[in-house]
Length: 453
Image 1 (cartoon, one colour):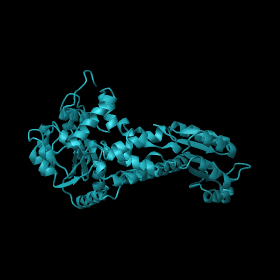
Image 2: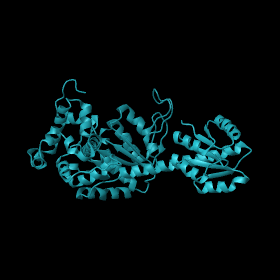
Image 3: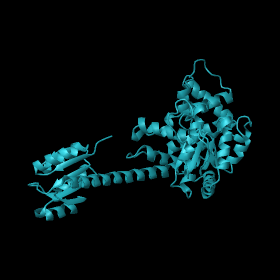
């Protein structure tokens, strides 16, 4: 952890030596300067938390010094030391940006207390800025972008879900933004200040999901050297988002159903249950109602889908693509002027986007990195099969009239071929997880090249 830094900017060298010795023993990093120019130079070279500013700096304009110090470090705290002869100067320093004042102390312990208070002010200000930044990020993550009729229907169901505390099931293809909908429901609910905790059921090994969900007691299994809270406890009073719920192991689905119905959980290795108040939102790209009961429990499906939100694929709401591009680019190219021409928007809208909004974001991010501003053309980064066809012919091609599953199967096969059957690279290009790609390969019966990984 970085030590707090205090700079003693004072003309009394003997006083600075005494204070430096005492503060160094307390763990502070201490810098010393005896004139304004030296103080500004050190502030420019080092991160300083607190400046202890004496009024006996000969030839220094205090009114100009304080603003100059604050320009070096926005969160800098300035503590003014004065005696009876320099009260007017101290008042000018306080009106010029200094935040604290005390008479020059005989007891250095009093000075330490004021420095400690100044440091706490800095930490509180930094925490406030961090919380503000987090709030802005959460708000952005909860924004449903677009005005298509389909998205307006989604918004209406989101508002309904936010007004009650019932379980919600979000369905839709991979990359459509199911996590955004979950965030939006939580953000608009009455408990939006409570925790929002998410877990991807497909991203964890099967033997770890139960411990992550419900926690465990010390000694519950080899390696459990201390008690650990599960995400049910972490989400207490708030929202628990279970992404890729269709990938949850069958033997855990009953425990999840009991936790939802009874509002109680028991840690692994624990002897007693305890209550939890958690709002459950689940998401899946699978059609759970058609899956065999041996893979996904029917009773859990019905319990989760009290309210159901279906997100349409991006190709079914192409009119939202211009607004999505503007929104996504705003977070990707901060400080740059990047504009999509009407011709480029036409090409981007013509693409069928099998990876949906996630694929769109990935393409825009790649384009923002490798293309200069004046040549910003994300359509050039799409699949060669698309780049070779103008938008109008593509929209009228036979492939557009194929069943959706056949289109997806062919697209996955093309991507696999392009990446020489490297599954990790193919999954990244498609904007889906590796486990999802493996499942789709199995479902569609796509031949696997020997040695592919």
